[in-house]
Amino acid sequence: MAKNTKNKTITIRQIGSPIRRPESQKKILTGLGLGKMHKTVEIEDTPEVRGAIAKLPHMVEVL
Picture 1 (spheres, rainbow, N blue to C red):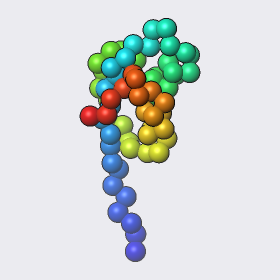
Picture 2: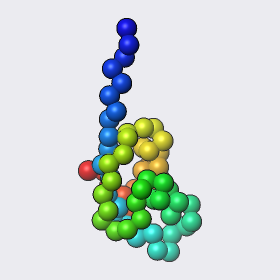
Picture 3: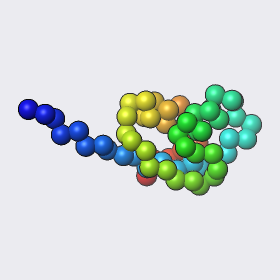
């Protein structure tokens, strides 16, 4: 029997500025589709995305 593979999404908003942050954090923001303050994106909820969010708890919030 085939599994029902619904694509679950997660909505995140940038709440912190990338100014004076390490280059690695800036790249993670770009990879998540963020880059400007208060921008909101909806992306697929995967372990990789959850890990990226966990590295930036001071810069993003999950809605």
